[in-house]
Image 1: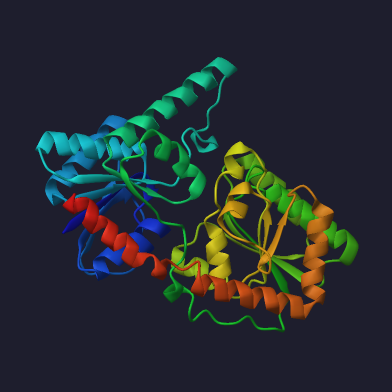
Image 2: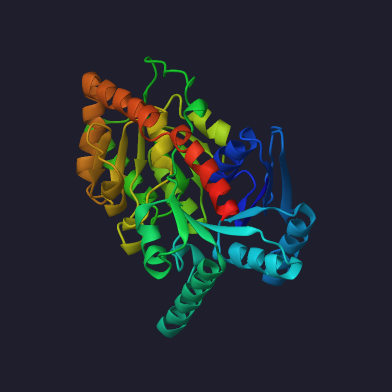
Length: 376
């Protein structure tokens, strides 16, 4: 069986698509092609090929996807966006195939990621456009994959009879099984990764570190920052912080490939995500949470409804008010001074990632779902 992954806003080496879904299907004997944005792939996987979407124009993107699908002739098409689902449906109609289109729902539409700028009426209009696009993508799809609970709700209400599964953002244990333990002689390392903006909580992280330093100094901690600044203003905030605390050791990386990202977690002690609590963030499950747990790192996260709905965090870290910088500073100090508590949370995180929040326990469910929707 042939399966194509179409992602018009994700790179070909996307964690979920390449390292988990596509590889799983290849191991099961499927022939797989990923059609997505350009990225460098440093490894060869049997039965897996890549096609790069080069254009930024929506019509040209559609033509590229159509051409790639026509050349590959997939039995099943897994789509990461509503536009991808629509393009795949157009291919099915144009080429008169029986290809099954699956919409893998992992994003909100509309979302802050779409940068809905302008006066209020314009924002409302743009938001409605994204709602319609999302609905159309769902309408033309034959089945759904849901990454998490809240993002599934609208589709289950509107399309209750379409086949669907929930496939969480868990990491495969094989990527973390041999991660080396941190050298105990090094400083306590605080890690923040992802989009480095105020909305995503990076400023809250810096303020919490400032609070810790004001109370305890810089001697016992270091920072590891992995991510990118979308604007000069975001970068300037970090640069101001770095110059103010020039004695604080800071290691920073831009975007890292999946293997390198996991490797850089080895010498980290505590991981953070202090995104602002708004309607969208509160109902979105942070993906990197499961990477951190698999690496055995306790976490300090914003107290989000989506996290509480999905899993208990007790014994793995803390859910906090992201603006309570003093509390966060106290948690950092507690972990540094209480090695028993730290080891307990670290061991719990590793164990839960292996036994519960493990992609390998869902891979067969995913493979069987692909087979079933094709038969139907």
